[in-house]
Image (cartoon, rainbow, N blue to C red; front, side):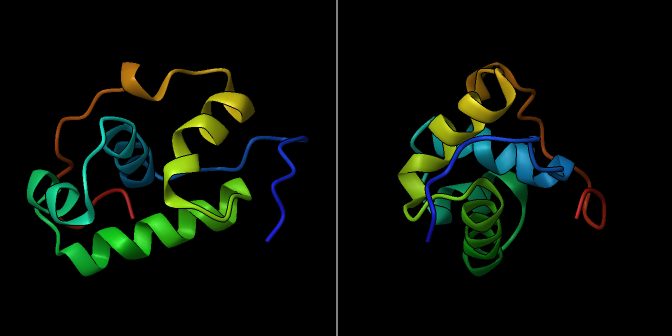
Length: 88
């Protein structure tokens, strides 16, 4: 998998933005699931999608890639849970 971090930032859903922030906080998939009201398996699916969109091979690289591509601090994002069925 490529680690190229150039070009236009990928479009992320509200849910994916929340997951980026929680990963930046050091949350596991279990913790992401608990905080967002989703299963750990769904949290992992979001992580997998983020790795592909951000072009990184490892989960722990997601926050840094997000920061590089967008210029935004993932820890500064709103982390309130999104209601079920909203935000992808």
